[in-house]
Length: 500
Image (cartoon, rainbow, N blue to C red; front, side, top):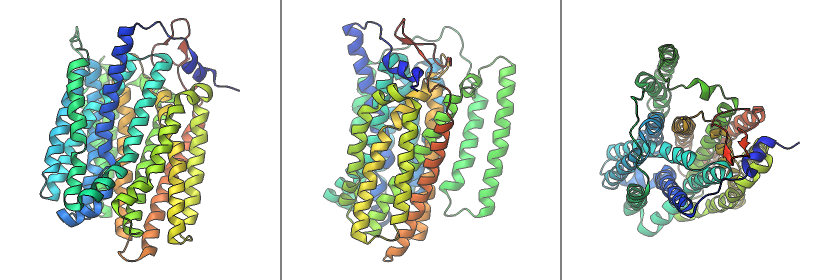
């Protein structure tokens, strides 16, 4: 039986759109896609530069974890407050400010002479990216409706996923051509021209928002407590190299206490007539909650797997950064092709299509886990490339459909906030998985001993498989009808977040 609600998401007739409005929508979408590409490319472009960073900057294990995962930490911290501010004060200024900070931080990273300077640059880049990206999804939600919104969200998700997968390819190419000493700096600088051009286009073409007619309530206490919870969860993982069990336990206890304080504060805010950051209408939606779980687990699984694949190919099999990057290219191509079909698939099959692809992903990772320990090096390389092809194809049919289905449940006036929570879940997952997968791999692998590299690779695959399995279960339990039904009479969505 077909999911009629998700079918309507694809097939509802659209309101007539003038040529001027169509041109404006295209420019808004182009700015959104460029913002996503510039900021999300930076997430993975340094993965292939880990050996160079160790050699050229003298970066130790903890430094590498901070460089790779610190970006996601501050990205995640900025998302929710930036999304809420975008809802309240307009998105144009925040997007420009976020891109500007991102560009300045990139310059600091290029000039870094010590590991701590690159860590600082990565943290600042994360703040800038986390400020800009909720505005992107909010702009798409505000600008497009019906099937056009699904296509636009799908295009953004596809660009984000492709930039993450292309990062190692581009970084490997730069390192191969320029050498490790200059190559990693050029890899950091790659996003600067994209960010600068996008910033100028946003200043020129994005409409200025009217100032709110009344004072907008911002849940500053809730934002601060949510940030504290995020820090308490992520810091011990990022600093796992120097954090013993007692310290990790203390951080987790602090996270629980901060979480309890957050819940109490939010209840108090609601009783006093304020707008809590944990918006009840948002988290009362089963589709939003389960879709966010799917996004969180899938994103963490994909980034963790990408990191251990890159490390294994370079340090375990001895491939150059360029060749290692090219081995991930099939995944990027497959994801690009399947992403173009995502909006059609979600319109026809709804949540079921996401579930099927997650099942394919789990099966692929399970097969790889069995093969890592038994295949000779040459055959294992071929198996890695094939598995990357399959996971990329599945990812293109997971990312954009799941994002469109989930964000369709955003309550009225909360597009930016919903986007912020949706993305912060992905940032938390990516920080945890990058730090955990990279940390375990570095700790287990012994230079010159392929067996230990196989073991580190197996642990990384296992982590990714478990997360993919959790995402599969969450997708199976989503019985919410997958998305709010669109109003065929007007060709526009029913009020966002209305679950029928």
